[in-house]
Length: 76
Image (cartoon, rainbow, N blue to C red; front, top):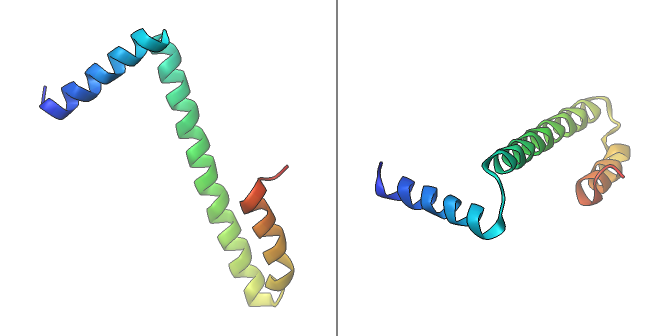
């Protein structure tokens, strides 16, 4: 193992002990974070495509407020 990898591995081991998190729970949380990140990226791509299409047909002005609201506070 290389030194940086070993240090990261050791920090994860210590966090399991201190926080009493099982490796299974840690991996499940990491998978959830990855899924949320990918969902956010995809949402931004869709918003960009929507604004681009609206610009071409002249309706972007009405969408900017809605997109801004979603970006600031989420869909709820």
